[in-house]
Image 1 (tube, rainbow, N blue to C red):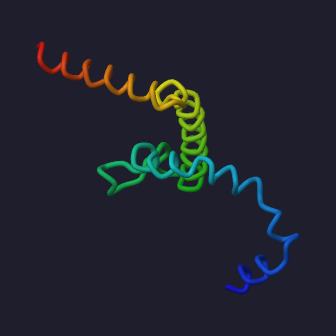
Image 2: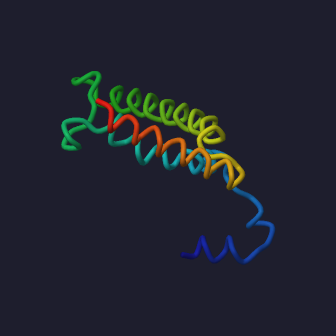
Amino acid sequence: ISYILVRNSFGFLRTRYSIFFAWFGDISLELFIGQYHIWLANNTHGVLALFPNCRILNIILTTLIFVCVCHEIHQLTSRLHSYVVPKTFQALLCRSFVLCFLLLFLTVIP
């Protein structure tokens, strides 16, 4: 609590931040969702083990893979966001109608 009080007391401390933690904050959604698909195994009752006898190497390697995959997923979702969610309301409404029509068409015709 004292760290928060000291940091928020002075204006020059509020303008500084850690680039490392800001980067992790940018990919936090992907980290949260990805942990269930990449890190955890056996229906979340176990942890992914690439090298069963080397715990430290296993932790380092799986964490590196996990963070790299989550970063790539973040890059992909950032690029695809502009295609899926348009900026104007009219384009959003048009795409929603097209999507509903396609879903209706695909569910009616086997």
